[in-house]
Amino acid sequence: MKHIYSKVAVAIGCSALLTFSGIATAQKPVVIKFSHVVAESTPKGQGALKFKEVAEELLPGKVEVQVFPNSQLFGDAKELEALLLGDVHIIAPSLSKFDRYTEKVQLFDLPFLFDDMDAVDRFQHSDAGRSLLDSMTNRGIKGLAYWHNGMKQLSTNKDKLSRPEDIKGLKFRVQASDVLEAQFRAVDANPQKLAFAEVYQALQTGVVDGQENTWSNMYSQKFHEVQKTIALSNHGVLDYMVVTNDGWWNGLDDEMREALTKAMEEATEHANNLAADLNERDRKRIIEDNKAQVHELTSEDISVWREAMQPVWKQFEDAIGADLIEAAVASNNK
Ligand code: LMR
Image: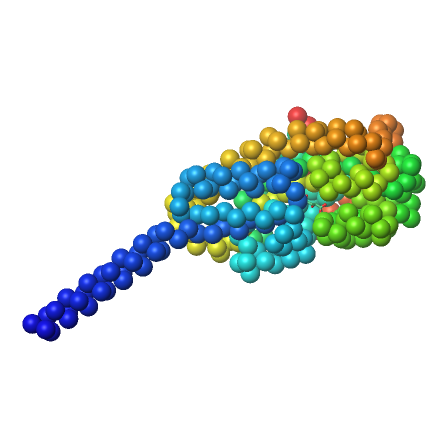
């Protein structure tokens, strides 16, 4: 009898344990860390928050999306490495920051490649554009979506910024991109690769004289407070690829992967719909602040910049692929 009781007790104990651990597992949400380097008020910041909102709505109690803005968790230099190590699950670096993993994505940095954001959007939706989302899977990085920020403008701590000769010899901060480095060399300026989080101080202390960025990034980082002139150059695009760790993504169960895919689609639509408005809002704020002077360029000025920077295309044609460049150029024709 005693023997039976103890067997029952063991059985009850085990089932309680099993039930307990079953409940514990079911209740513990999967934590998804989404890290980025910009402010929450920017298109990327808003996109990341939307992804959190929709993912947690679609998978109640099953996921917790933790968003870390402003390089809080990882800055430019470390975020891709951290993704590969599994320390973060989703990041959205600018398209300029992948050249160690794929030379093809360097395409987006070619100066004056796209006429406007509509052309960028058309290219990203084309087969050629979509194929780039898979260009790093052999390195463990899966592209989930493109997110817009916008066209870049040039800024310096000088009064004059109309023609390439105005930046001759000036030190320019560039993102970690060989194409952007070549772009500034082509106009006899001195490019210096710096992480985004270091740019404000570098501009303030004169470590660099100028930089290129979108209105939303300039305003949210207060670059206009430490620059004298911003030229409306629209000479290149600053957009993002939202990427995840391929192994982690494929290891998720189907229900979760499908819901996260849906959440990413909604977040992409949200960020991309907002991007132009947020940049326009921040362009106006910069003008109202009246700290840096916003300078319009004539179409002649633009042609001179375009011609001076054009040799960069040839320089990177083999690495990027002539076909891909052609496909991008074709997206300028509506
Ligand atoms: C930059 O480094 O200037 C940008 O890529 C920052 C960002 O993520 O928009």
